[in-house]
Image (cartoon, rainbow, N blue to C red; front, top):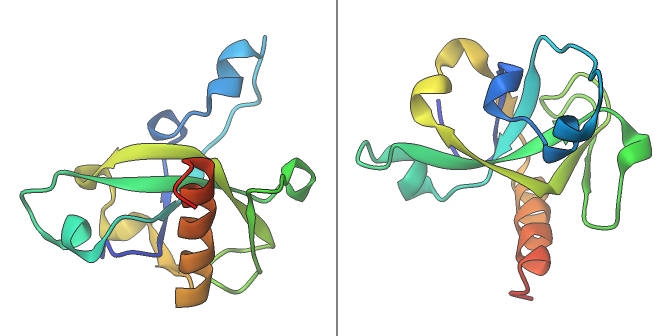
Length: 123
């Protein structure tokens, strides 16, 4: 189910951070995890074909001031960060039920959205 705060495990080609383009030999990945931050309307209405997702990382060493910590058990396997500066447009077709991993708590989603708003200069 695509919803605000939904977490999906997707093929890495669908959310490739720009840093990878500058690495000589990036480590191969089986998947990437993303957090959906779009509105309920954008998530649910079929006329909207895409949603916005934030890349998650279990590499806490990469954490920066704009990242939000998500604790293990909140639909992630281990403590992770929502990297607010790594925002992707994702096709809903690629977010099928088999890739759904759960939904973060409402306050976590609000923190991630606030971090994105700060990065964009809205706050």
